[in-house]
Image 1: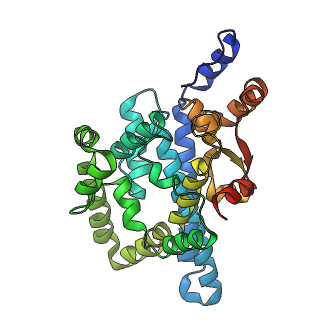
Image 2 (image 1 turned 135 degrees about the vertical axis):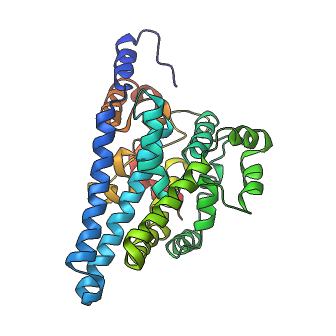
Image 3 (image 1 turned 90 degrees about the vertical axis):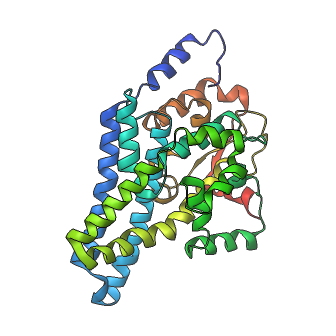
Length: 322
């Protein structure tokens, strides 16, 4: 956490208050995300099914985009659990994070927490495990579009999954190269992959038993296809703009960007106020629902003295591509 000037007592006290997690806020946002997912599935599967011709196909594609956006939102909400912001009780925090946010989108809380906290500690250094996500930028436009096409076709999916979970046969070597042997040994001590595989075994076996082939088909259409395509694009764009091609990688106020966009675009690309990324890196203990207030506070009291880095989304993308 960054340290403010010694005389900024009121500012420090305000940030301390903003850092207190509220479990009900987390539960509300989880419920909202799952309600939107359920509504999208119900509308497409029951009211205007894909078999009803062009209207059904259009509704399905809209549902696919909405579901992918909420899968992205589950990633962001799970990120709150990584920082233990759902509850002051760790078991509540991790239970919510695992079973209602991260496991459903194929992410191990333990692995991502290990990687992500290393990222916060070593941002923009050789020890940052997230360097592969942002170090390649800026890219030529052709290379950028090639990445997005591969994402929407699911061709980069294995790389994403290796980052978030342990895949049989391929992840052990990846973890050693990605984390280093010392980190990999420490991660093994906290891995929750057994719980992950039990969770998905129960979901698939239970769904198949009670819902049969219709449930399995719906699972593919309304969960796997969005995740393997649009969700990958949303995650790609957000991962790039947060740290890609920033002006001063050694300056904590200029090595990540806060970016602003239209609320409709934010619904897909920056759900749950994740675009306040500079504020998150400066004060990762502040929950996402307090980040707008933190931004206003820092913009008034701190940013004018530090040349803090924030801009419009389009400006940021222009520095990534071209």
